[in-house]
Structure formats: C-alpha cells, structure tokens
Length: 500
Picture 1 (cartoon, rainbow, N blue to C red):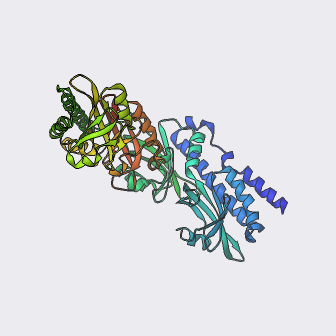
Picture 2 (tube, rainbow, N blue to C red):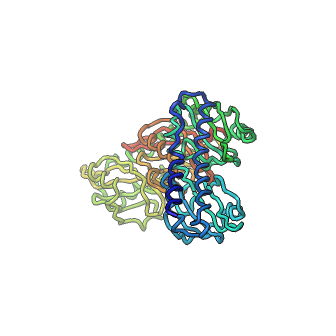
Picture 3 (cartoon, rainbow, N blue to C red):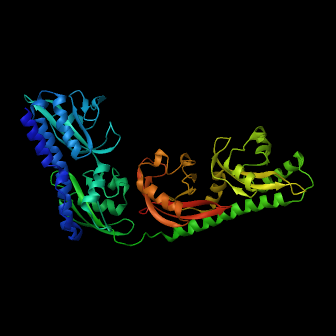
C-alpha cells in the first residue's frame, strides 16, 4: 500500500500543471501561435487536476471510504494548485483538506445530482463555501461495484490562478487574455476583477455579437469595440468547454466623450462657485463690526445667514472652548450646549483661528456632514469663537446636478483624497472609506484607480463596480476634476458605461 501511495504522489508531482510552463518565446510569437500555446497550457492545468482526481478515485482508500487515506493524495494536489480539495458523500456531507469533516453539505449545489449520477464536473463556476473565493470546480465520482459511493473534487481558486497565469504567460502590455465558459461567464482574465462577469450580458453589443458567434466555433478571429477597436483570436480548450481569447488593445489612450467633459466642467464650476458663495456670505457675516457679542446679537447673525443660504442645513456659534452655544433654525435648538471640541475642524480653528472647511463626519442627526467655519471676534478684536455653516453634501449637490443635466446612465460621486465618499448618487455609499470598506475590497482596479484619484487633481480612467440600481458588475469609464476650499479638496468623478 505504501508503494502504491508513493507512486501516485510521485506521478501527481511530476505531472503538476505548474511544471510545464509555456515557452518563453510566447511574447515574440504571432497572436495565433501564442494563443494556441497559452490555451493548451491553461487546459493542461485543469486536465491534470481532473486526471489526478480520477486516479485517486480508483485507489483502495477511496473505494473503502477512508478519509485518512484519501487526504494525503488531495493534499499533494493542493500543494501544486491552490484550491479547496474535498471528498463528498452521497448525502452531500463532505470532508476537506483544510477542515477535515466540514459539517457542511453540498447536496443543494447545481452540479451535485449529475455528479452523483456518475458524471464528471469540468469547470463549474462557484463561490467556494469554505473560503468564499471564486472557484472553478473539477470533480469525479467514486464508483464501487457499479455504484457511486461518493466523489472527489477540487475548487480551483481562480484569483490565485489568474495571477500565476499572468506571470507565466508574460504577454506584452498591449494584449489581454481571458477565458469564457459556454454561457459567457468569465472564468479567468488578465484583470482579476472581471472574473465571473458575464461577457454576453454585461458587455456591450459589439462584444456580445462577436463572442456569440465565436462560441459556435473551435477557433478563429474576431473584432469588437470596447473602449476602442480590438482585434482578437479565440480557441476552445481541448479538454474543457471553455474558450480562450487573446485580444490586442493597442496603445490608444482612453478617449473621454466630449459630452462627459462638458458635463463635468459645468458641474465642477457650479459646485466651486456655490462653495465660494457660501464662504463669501460667511466671511461678510463675521466681518460686520459689533461692540459686543451677546446671545441675541449672535442669533441674529445666524438667522440672517440661514436666510441667505437655504441649502445650508443650519448655522451655529461655537464658543472659544468648543461648545455649541447657539444654533438656527430653531428646530435644532436641542443641540445647543453640545460639546463639539473633539471634532478635528473645531480643534484646528481654535488653534489657528483661521477659516476651516472640514472633512466629512457623522452629524448628531445621523447623516454625513461637512462644516465651514470662520473665526468670530468682538468689537475689541478679541477672539470669541466661530460661526459655523453646517452642510449636508447631497442637499447642496443634488440641485446643482439637476442643473447640469447629467446624461442618463452617467453617475457622479465625490471623494476626499483620503478615500471618504462625500457624495454618491447611491446613498448607501456616502460616508464609506474607499480604501478600507469591505464593500470595495474585491475591486482591485477600482482601488488602484482610487489611489490615482487621490494623488492627482484631474484625470481619466476605467474601473469595474456594480452598476447603479443593480447587483451586477459593470465596466465604467470616468473622468475627475477637483474643487477646493481652505485647503480641503474634493475629487468630483463622473462615470459612464463606455458601450451604452
């Protein structure tokens, strides 16, 4: 028995998919030759995995339902190709290399009945229940006395595999590669954010038409438009019902439609003007000469400011100790005498006695707010505190957005350079931190682009994220500009789907 196990382990190690990398000359070969080699390389990874599972399924340990005997075989596969490797029983309960008995059940999975009927599974797209990762399932039944007594499976982790393939294929930068199943699901892609997006339903009409025709053939060439014209070759993998595509993107820079630029220019100008107007109104207010500062006098200042600026939520007087003493309109009177001295912008104003435009912060009222504050002096030029304008960004921005007439299907969002979402047409995203929030964690290219947005006042780019009002991912092109006030910057982003 030990000899058999040694021979099996040696065969699986020798046949490891990583052992046979494509030729180093791929980068200089023609597209069709390069695609042929790459497709066979990708196919060999999954073909070897399936063959290894079949071999293990034929062992006495598998036929005797001996998990302790099966596990070393699966563990050897796990060392060569990252994934979740498991043995599943006919009732759906299963064991995995990482957890042993999982106390989980696979009987409700779409592939399960077919697997237990004696059919192999080749590349079924799933989110691994034990890891939460995007995976492609390879599985074989274990047959004993003409009965299926269980199955062996490998949920191959696609994020890890795509990164390794990028390294091994080493294609020129103006080429992309991706692998689709027969339903159009993206199983692998040069950019991991595209994995599990459906090219037939989430791509543009040009891509959809080209791929719909390509999936009817074993190999060929096609042309489609996606952010520019793309020439591509495709080939079906020999052992899988998958197609690999190699497309030349060219070095043409991203072209932002003139309509997008005009809309963004107009909105940014309107937003900057409105912020300047509010600040100018506040500046005039605190500059008015006064002989003394009493409650009645300060309250009149607040009322006059609110009357001039209906898009400001409230105005308040914060004294020299950071206590909110007066506020208007009167409906917010219950907030008077609240200690706001721990807020960063209050600390900054009390220290520097210079105007401040705050970062976003959670307001007492339960929404994200920003505050514009200017120092206040009495008639003897003694510092007595500040007059603060309390702004809810969406109440300021929504009217300006309507005025700008943003085209249908375009989305506007505003971010601070630290990643805080100050405004989004999807209200659920307001206040989230782009670089830290789990909502964005799996969107690597959005995070990369976010860092560019944070570092540059203007720019263009593209990213993937869920479409507005939908749970499906979408490709988006975008441009951004900046508004500024008292050292604070907002990046104003306008995004659109490039093929709609």
